[in-house]
Length: 297
Image (cartoon, rainbow, N blue to C red; front, side, top):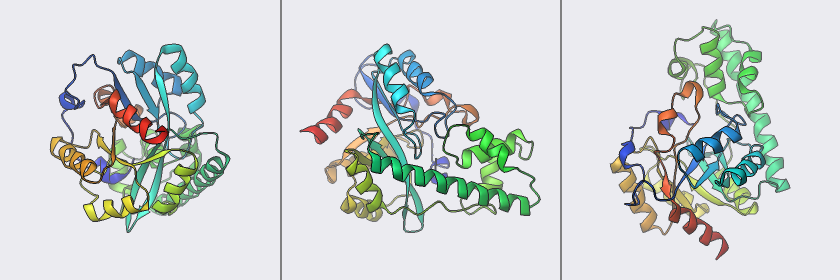
């Protein structure tokens, strides 16, 4: 998850579902991560967690990876949970790194799969450069430790932070970002620069919808309009980094520009220590149905 989000203010979990419906109403979490990117739980464990939380639907939105979707879909059928195919991509907007969420994609689309393979290779190259920078700073982190953290997932900075922590090279997960690998930090390296128009084309080619993920306080309306012109379908309004004021602001923009709304917990688990967000930052199922009708009407 991008650093611009990590510093956002925390929303009030008691108001996470803004539908005005009772807690028992059908809800969905449209932003979760598994071991196929930087999450701590398997696809099965995420679906089971959704079932235990009383959710009706969940979307797996791993970074640059759709390998966990088939497993999640199969377990969803067993547990009565709708699994919405998803994906999270990083794009470059000016001098910023922003994230896009894709929903209802054909996760077997070959062109999409080819691009994701390329993106994961670029992630590995970035991790290698970060480790080299750390080594030059006399921080003796080994790439093997990072890859061990990543396992089957596409490697990212959270894996580097976890490796630094487990190897005793930093005191906390968050200190790894603040001291070394966060944006502007001494070991920071930029991601491969994917332009928004390219990402929107890729998502559209796979039959999906594109949403701006967790814009926080760091995406202004001028930048948003630029994204809309390039093909943005919606905004993630409900997110742990959005307080009530931000949610109201982005919901207003959704209405103003005839966009769609999404929301979720951005759950990772593990050292991210965000277990308390799961099941609280959700959207009512009518939001999902509106998204679906935009695609299939």
